[in-house]
Structure formats: C-alpha cells, structure tokens
Length: 328
Image (cartoon, rainbow, N blue to C red):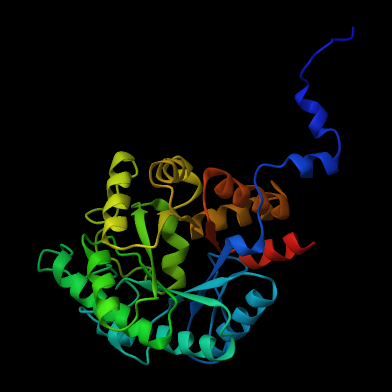
C-alpha cells in the first residue's frame, strides 16, 4: 500500500546532507568550558574516581590551556586542590595572592592571553571543615560573614587576571557585594557567572575527591544549596542574581536539571550555562568501561541536549574530547 501524504517528516531525514541542513541545534568547541584541577608539585595526579581526569601542577595547567585554545575552546575553569596544611577554619588561603588559583591564573594569562579564565569563588577548597563558608559553633554556615570573605577572594582572583568570577557558594547577596567590589576596585569588565541554581546533589562526589575535600565535610550543604525538589525557587535565585549584577547564570548539575535550564532560559532570556558535573562524567565513563555505550556518541548527545535546552555553553570534563570530535 502506498500512502499519499502531503507531509512526510522522514523526507528531510533521508540523507546526511539533508539532516545537516535541517538541524535545529549546533554544537561547536566554542560552546565548551573545560574545568581543570590544580595541584602543588611538578607531577600529574590522576583522579581515580574521574577516569581520564587529572590534577595538574601550574606548568601542566598552562599546557592544558594551550590545548584548549588550539582546539577552539574559549575558556577554562580552575579549581585548586589546596594542601591540607593550608586548610583552616576561616579559609584564609583563599585570600593569599600567591595561592594555587592565583598562580595558575597568572601563568595562563601570561602564556595564553587569548583564552578566558573562569575562577571558582567559594571557601570549600580552603576550609578545614569542607563547607563553602564560615561556620558557627553549631556548624551553621554564616551568610554575611562568608560574603565578606568571598568579596576579598573575588578581588584577589581579579587582581591575578581572572576574566570570569564564578561564585559557587550559594550565599544570599554575594553577587551584589562582589559586583560592587569589582566596580569600586577598578575591575568593571570582569564578568560574574553566578552558580544561581546549584542543587544539593548526590552527583558531586568525584569532584570532592578532585579538590581534596572528600572526608572533610562536616554534615551536609543543604542549608545553602538548593533542594532538588524545587523549581520555582530556582527562578527566584536567578532573578535575584541578575538584579545584583550577574552577567550570566549557571544551573548545576546538568542533565538531571534540564527542566530548570529550559525554565530559566524562557523566563529571563539571558546567557545560561550548565555544569555537567563529576558524577555525570563518571557515569558516562562507567558505561563505556562496562561496554554499555559508545563514548563519542554519549558525549556529543549529552552536550547537544544542553544546547537544545537553551544553554549558551557547558562546563564539562569531556570538553577536550568533544572538541576533537567536533573538529573531525
């Protein structure tokens, strides 16, 4: 039997050239931000819970930045593995102008000035208790006192050459305070990418290994990171951060929160980024290791999902691999 159909949607799918012509979403290396972990010393340190990902000394971080630049990745995101003896209750190492983050930032901007550097603003890589802020005698993270330290941390990173300040702490009011400090500190062109909707997720485990925070955390982060059950609250968080001066916003984690990405993009029509977090990366790698999936296809399909949902870009540990695939 032959059907006489005015519309056959399969017509445009019948050949590769036609599928390319009618594609609605495009993924390029310019859509990627590559998170990198910094360590002291001179040697690469593979991270067991993140197969294929390592901590790098400052010289190695510079080489990774050059690789990213050469493949068209426009920005790298830095996270330090602060030595244990420098982690204190007040996280004072965050204010040290010669800490790992600042040294790596300066080295990249000296050697690869045409790549963007995004620096994480939060105290968890620097505190002995593993929280993103200062805590009181009951273990509660203090909001306003923490914001004061975050402002100093942001200025410290801006002086080192950071292009994007990315507060990941989820303290109330920190975006406005940081924006004011950057303006008054002669850094008006330093961007703020706010972790505006960061959830208290079970997908962060390998990251805490990577920054040396595993086993340090006392309690959990539910009093400041968002409840995974909430969506309307995410829109309120985004609205506040935009009003306070954020240039772009982030949803974290990524794939489990695609609905939040869509709602944020539709509600505000601003640059929205997703962080494909360590647990998401680890699941893809575990599937590949088990023979349950093809890495290349899984990586590109998940990244395309973020773009389709409305993201301007994605932070992903697969950035280098994806960029190589996209270059063919």
